[in-house]
Image (cartoon, rainbow, N blue to C red; front, side, top):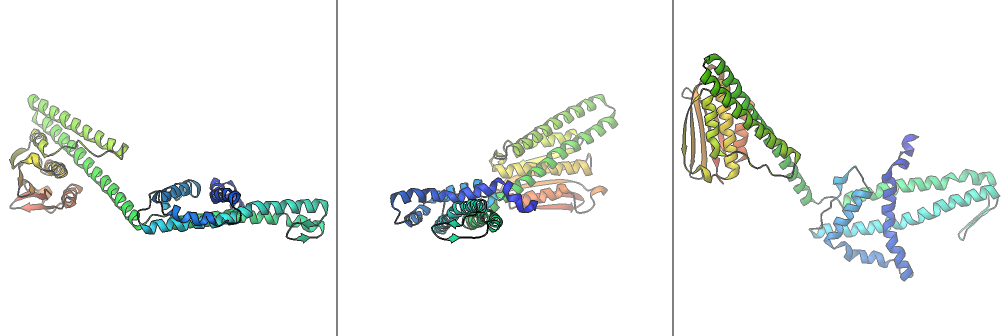
Length: 384
């Protein structure tokens, strides 16, 4: 019983009924002008529905009056861009007008019928209307009183569900809009994955450097080396905090583009951090690194960062050769270090997987694995 009466306490039930009544306001005004031609408003709806902005207005109405809080995405709020959308809008306006013609009399006559039955039950007089005269026993009138009210209730709920279903069909997103929404959702997922990778690269690098440097400082028992290690830990931690704050800012402001990310022009910071951790880094940069496009340069920085992090994490303080080359429309990155027992086979960690994903995202390729007794990360990224 409670489920049966639930629509009575839903605001959507009444906003849907009001939505059905809106066309009748214009119809009522026209009837004051010329009652002999009630079909004229329906004809005027045809050119009106062909106006692109009308679809947006109808979509906004449907969102707020037919499906408040549930199913908003089912209604488009974009102007018509194709003739198919325009004719769908025309059909929607005509259907809305037709259902309004049904809802109007129902709203008036069913409550009036209930009042007549109550009056007949109390006065024991036959019902007299311009259409029909009914003479029944008094107790029969009393039993019939709920019927018009139940019919009104069923009509309100049923027509509301019908108009909502038709609105989803006729005002729903077009195939082009669905594709655009899918692309937007894909971009959001890619952005989340990129942020996750950045957090892994930046924070993972900072923690690895801090752990390696702290361990080396404790083992060295050299105050000067300890002081340099603590300074490097401080600098690395501060850079990681800046990266974390920037990523959190992007998450808080979804519309703001992710900017101010480090590029390969700041690679010296990574190399110096690795050197302070005990690694002997031999770096060679060839070509105009500063001319590398922003997206490629930023991803190249993260790839280099993750590669150095993997060296420190798995191999420790070992000689590292870093090659950065910009030539023939390609950015080449190579990081090599002596192969140790800890990385005797193909990498399976999230770091190497992230390197491959970044390269693939830019249309490049990445090779990781043992080469001539060394562990090598070799990445090629197209500049276009």
